Amino acid sequence: MKRYYLQTYGGCVYEDGVLRFVASKKSEDAKWGVKIRFSDWEEDCYIFSPACLYDGNRFQKVDRGWYPPTYKDEETGENAIPLINNVPALNVDGSGVVEVTTGDMATPCVGIYFRQSKQATFIFFEQAVKGRNIGVRIEKGCVTLQYPSDRKLQYRMMETPHPDHLGECTIKDEGEEKGVAVAKGETVTSRIVFEEFACEDLPAFFEYFYNNRRKVMQGERAKTKYDNALWNTMEYHLNAHNYNEEKGFYAQTNKRWHVGWCGGGMSSYPLLKLGNATSKERALKTLDYLTFCAGKTGFFTDLPIEEWKQPVEASKTMQYSATVRKSGDGLQFLFKHFKITTPKQEWIDAAKKCADAFVKLFETYGTFGQWVNVQTGELIMPCSSCGAIVPAALTEAWLFFKDEKYLEIAEKSGEYYYQNFVAQGYTTGGPSEILCAPDSESGFAMVESFVTLYEATKDEKWLKYAKDATHLFSSWVVSYEYEWVTDCEFKIQKINTVGSVFANVQNKHSAPGICTSSGDALYRLYKYTGEKSYLELLKDIAYFLPQCVSTAERPLYAYNYPHGDERGKLARGYICERVNMSDWESQNWIGSIWNGSCWSETSVALTFAELMDFEEMKEN
Image 1 (cartoon, rainbow, N blue to C red):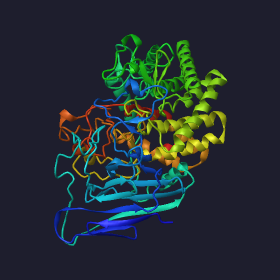
Image 2 (image 1 turned 60 degrees about the vertical axis):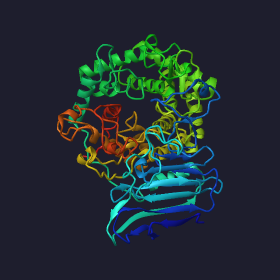
Image 3 (image 1 turned 135 degrees about the vertical axis):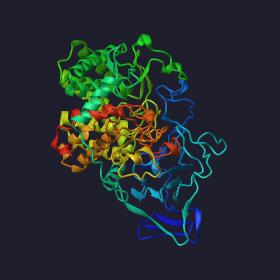
Image 4 (image 1 turned 180 degrees about the vertical axis):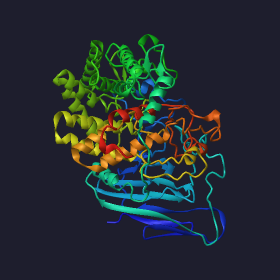
């Protein structure tokens, strides 16, 4: 049954899957569009836009005037509710308006799942019209496609202004949201495809999306290489720019220790496996530092406790806090290191103590939550899938220590994460700086945990869960080649966006790689299922990455200097995390980068170590 009807405006018509605009006169400010109205709207329907909206982002909003946002005392504790910053979102009750553009989406698409009638509608459309992103307005009962974008309010990092409080993120340039120039009689066309079908549940909804995400916008992955020259560049960079000589660990370019998440105790793994003698020695020292930095509970910390300081702007509750994802990453990667070197007893002891801490946390609270006090073991923020990697880490603990309690909690927590997150159509709070916003990082951690549980138990349930989690995760992966318009760095360098991965709904940029993983769980899932599309998704992600590495032969340049200006040249091996298709950091940032490097370097190194020995992964 058709649930929608169309109303065009601005002198356009829709027929046979094409919106056609014919200019009646010459204009420098032409605008047109189509309103898609739904006749049988359901109040609890699930509203989706890839990398942008998950259940309409209908979480309780809070305003934070600092970055990264943190929780206040009264917002934490066992009875806490999920909170998000002031990002594009509908209100908790479904009211309100979201205004975004196709640059905010991994695939230009809006999907709606009607829970009561078990029906789904997908709208797939193109990215741009005459070099401008298309606007998308979503509100109760209506989706409007605007040619070009015609937003009243424009999102800026962590803030969407209210009409009665216009702030820094409002559109200041009067021409920024103007229409496009057309000649009299000029015809402009744009494809829009509608799909309606019976749909049992949200996993089925996302399986349909996964199989149809290239319905309108398409593109082949980049033709890049993983060769000795690239490895040498990355090994050089990690040793020249990322190693902290004073304290003895691999970090990021700022040389500050952060366990897990962005590379601490993770980048050491590929260097230990593939690196030269210096790299191997330093990798082992990094494990010494990882196990040294642990709270008395067993959870790993970002600083030795004696160096810990009260976070500025944070509550007293957040002192001595860390996300459970960080300890989960650290624990999982300890076991990876154990497989390629003889572990020291203190490493083994630290791994066991951390695994025991996670068991106690789940037995006490029924979840791993998001933030934990590393000194007391008290759960600070419960409502998040931040700890989605922990079932994988505990499964590895079971395999190593042969203690059934680890597998028991791994399975219980894996089931909890599937039912409360994947089956609900979102994962939340993986990065430390997004509160409980939907994100891709905990989404991929789900895939890793479910695949690892399947490998250990051979229970087909986990394979099904891994497939469902992959379909959800794929919504964060850019599926088409974005059209760079201005002479930005990415247009000059011919960067192909297929396979870049959006971070979360707050930080609205795509990025080089999965933070922080090679994505090898997708390869294992492909081997267990024989489903080649999982391999193709992984190759999209892997072969996007080398484009973003600044090399001696092909340096990249920061946005605030002209291309080729030595002052803006990124150092050899640097990778900026920004793949900006959205204007969330202003129009000047689209297709531009800053002069720095970050976690993506770990993803490249891990891709070498975990994937490039497989023949199926090789492209060139």
